[in-house]
Image 1 (cartoon, rainbow, N blue to C red):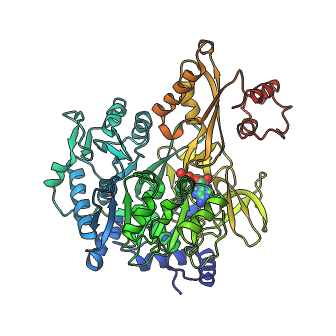
Image 2: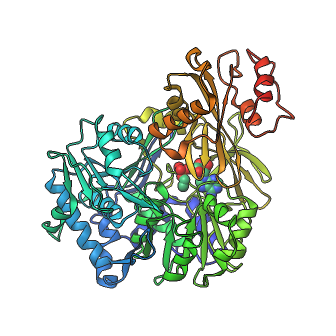
Image 3: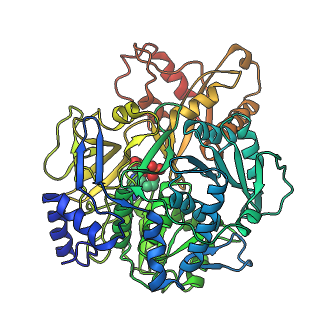
Length: 635
Ligand code: PRX
């Protein structure tokens, strides 16, 4: 029996039992058999969720890029590592072999070094989905610098907050990006952000759209000439197992984003292991995950997991609707994609279009389909299964989070029977539990509760950068000795899990995790706004959309409401990015509040969802009369 590659259900159960009974032996064997270590570990696991402190493979030394690149050179040096599909279908795809990737990563790493970047320094990467994004991530890892990739759809303010939070020294960006028929001035956004970032001494700029941009003479440099003169060899920095690999920001229940810090060895072992199993990856497969590397899905399942397995991983620069709604399927046909991993929001958007966009293409190369980011509704699941997978491809509904680093609950294709809307069973080594509101574990099946994990897994985030207290409070204080995910879940009669959604103030819009607090903060900065509350409501394509209840200051009362709505959304676009824009804005005279002054979001959620038949108990409100008034004017 192999721990590493599960092929049928009985094997899954055997491996799972072993992984739970003896996690150290299990993960020790996985790590031993499949990776390149400069020094083996002294201890597989050391943990204490009360602190919380978790260490995997302590004492081991390695470099993750040796595992993702160097060790493949002898066996598959000429195999495509990264297959780049540009925004414009007329522009040829680029096949970057492992040999070429090695050369490019080493050169880039040497450029970083020449700019004074060393082990432990933070480098902010703000790039579109072009090969340089993956290469710069790996170049940081090569020299032990900590990368912090910021999704290139975030605004200047969001970017500067993230740069300052982790004290980054350098930004890597491009002159601009292509997005369908549009171009975006990324360098201009960086320039705005850097007005507030005194710690940035160097900006490297990739030329992508050939636009005319400003270069600040003592700060900005074009990357290409530096690469041209850089050495092709870069000896990897030898890292300790628990040295930080990257920081990635996620929304939280306060306005400040949380910089989730991931470390090296455990993250590598877990992402590689889960990639191999969840996608049933085989040597000649062509794997495509449509996420952006600016999110955790791209980190773990475009870059590290696939490359650690020597896979061919596709990077797509564009959008599913350009030049038309058949683009995804055109790419599947063109590159004979075997595993396709996307988000429910994309599936729903494409399912709305004419079916000819799908049937026109030959999708017979597909073997496994995946989804991630939010619950997938039954209709979307069936559309995906019937029309994309042609009922032959198992759908892996993968549940996980930025914090978990890798997929924790998912079917293993061809082993776990799938069930629409169910993420099904935990991965080996993962021990989910459902908790009730009083903090007790809910036993048995056919039960619903708050989803926690009671034992560490190798790729869990170790802290929030610069704020361990917040890490403890957010994830380890709601339930004693357990990691709390923030999600609710149902466990069915056979023990399958179905994720029911967030139970906190995070709303998932088009698969993006948005905290209500940062959006409210952005709105409240508008001079005419006194206070606001954001809730989610069901949306056909986005899953959830945002509904804002806004109280105006006296200065705003006389203003035109349509203009104010536009300004509120403009404010959000500037502070966060267009992904957080509100679909509906209702100006209200007050918000329903408890006697302790907390906004009763439950009621607002019901109003926004037009589900007002049973509002529950409103008698504890300070101002119960406001509820009717808001309802009467609801949008
Ligand atoms: O609510 C869950 C939802 O996305 C949240 C994590 O968001 P983020 O950190 O941005 O990571 C997204 C990509 C891993 C979770 O707490 N979520 C993610 N996957 C699923 C899901 N909800 C239901 N089903 C899923 N498969």
